[in-house]
Length: 160
Image (tube, rainbow, N blue to C red; front, side, top):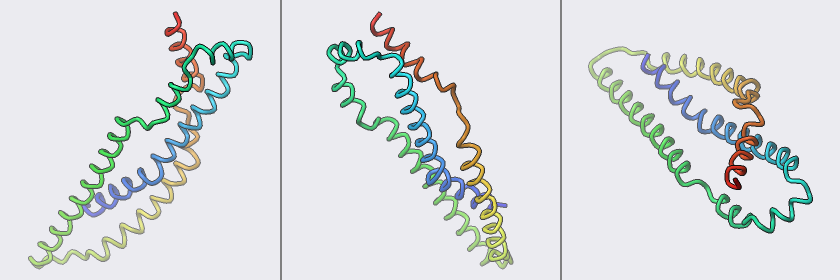
């Protein structure tokens, strides 16, 4: 049971950082980009574009927001290191436990258990990948116009 849980935790950790986090970021970036392109074109008519550009410090804002958010980056790095260290500590604990039990003469049939778990998690991994690739990635967590509405609300509040 411990081996099963540890393999599952390790698999899900790697799966999250190698696939899910990148997929989430990609989908979120695409959603924001397309919404801003579609909705901003509706709001900013050509006659107002020159006026807005002349009176709004677009270059300063662009320079400010091109940098990666340090807080988010630090939190994500911290999460990755925490998950990595928890995995390492658990695996070390398991290996030490297995060595102790083996020296005490307990027949654990570890090879059979590990092979069986690897086969199980290979199938589970394929199913999870397919699920996230073809189902979960299609889910839209917020109304598409939410970001545009919020953006416009903030602009209105700033100019009111």
